[in-house]
Amino acid sequence: MAAKRRNFSPFLSILVLIVLNIFFYLPSLEYDFVWDDKDLYINAKNIPLNNPWGNLWEHFVPKKDKMFMPITYFFWSFISSIGGVVDGQFIPYPFHLFNLIVHIINSLLVFLLLKKLLNSNLPAVLGALFFSLNPVQIESVVWISEARGLLSALFGFSALLFFVSYKKNVFVHTSITSILIILSILSKPSGIVFSLLIILTDWFLQNKPKAVDLLKRNWFYLILVVPFVFVSFRGEATKIIEFEIPLAYRPIVWMNAIGFYIQKILVPVNLSPGYGITLAFLKRDILHLYPILIALAVLVLGIFVRFKKHYFYSLLFFVVAFLPVSNLVSFYYQYWSTVADRYVYISIFGFAFLFAYLVENHFKKLQYAFLIVLPIIYFILSRSEIVKWQNEYTLWNDCIEKYPKRIPQVYLGRGMALEAKNQIMSALDDYSESIELDSNFYFGYYNRGNVLFDLQKYDKAIADFTRTTQINPKFVNAYVNRGLCFLEIGNLDSAIWDFDKALQLDSTQVDVVLYLAEAWEKKDSLEKALQYYRKAVSMGYKSEEIIKRIKFLENQKKF
Image (cartoon, rainbow, N blue to C red):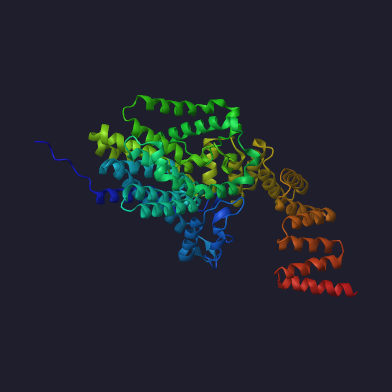
């Protein structure tokens, strides 16, 4: 008599996924804002502190050179309104908690989707664990800014799950799937891939489907994303021109990225938010093109396996899911690196599916062993990877220790963190290193100039600010700070020229108006000084000190 097969219940499956994800990512709840979190996203300009919902509708209007992700801003505004702001400051804890909750939901969606595709419970759990606990996912879960990617995945996986689960009414089926795809795209533009992933999944579920039939059933999902493709390109357009990868190199860089990601997913060690694998780096060191061999080997392997349909579904899902950032088209982050862990958050589902399939069909006796061993291995590997996200210094220091002298941005980041810790000379060294790596890296000159200004080395600071303006003539703060240097050394005409230039570029800076007033006053031009003090008041700067200064100068004019 055959032994009764042990049953791993759906309830226990869900419990395991929730508990293990909380256990893995719990330390991140204590981590700080890092990288772009506050500079680009979680700040008073985007989310007013006194009214978090105040700017919400502005985010629903696409803007040039800005990622279009209004749904993400909706959730950030919600978080800010229920505890994300304390004593007039954003606090990271609730934002980290939100990321963790969304990731757990995604893990459950992956479990349900795998169960639907493979019709097996425990392998689906193992696939969901492969997806959710793989250390490559740390960047997406722990970095607050990547709530955009987590939300995009949530709505996208929901669309896939609904697509494969509900077939009763064509209109309802298409409508709800479409709405979920749109929500995915409005969370992060790369959600456009779910239209293709739905067609791919439909192909997998059909018995020898014809391409024409697939398009007839799913053409609407392709048409649906077209407007969002144009919006996405508009958001990237002017930022990529200087470092756009030439067309001839793109297939090479794309294949290299495929192999790189396969390597990192299967052996998730030495992870970093700053790999620094730019086109320039690859040209300097062609040995780092070895991942192309990995990509080719995986492709060739598909010729020999018996389960070709499952194999190529997983491989195509993996490749298609990161298509917008595959390097076949240009995107802004290529300036930093052609690869990033967060880009394969959705793609990992392809390998999770393949792993679950192999467990169910070839390693069935090892299912419970995998259930124990896989989380333990991932836990050990993830401890050293997750801790680097604590704060700015630990993040960039880890990048530099693992991949030194590749890109200037990580030295800039560590330098700014050191400067915040008042380690001025160490910060100065990092800024200098960033310039040595890229002589046109104007942020390095600008930040080094700021340190030199604080050290009262005005001539050297002026040289750095001048170099900044030569590289980027529209960098307002470089003119302002160079003007302050001239003001300190008594070169009033040059100071006035810089302040005027800054106001030409940005007329809203009331501080610059006050600097102009001060410069004209030092030149004994009381009329000009009064003109700018009054302008500052008209711009809303009505401090008691300025009012007194205006009255004093008005009295001076009488004598």
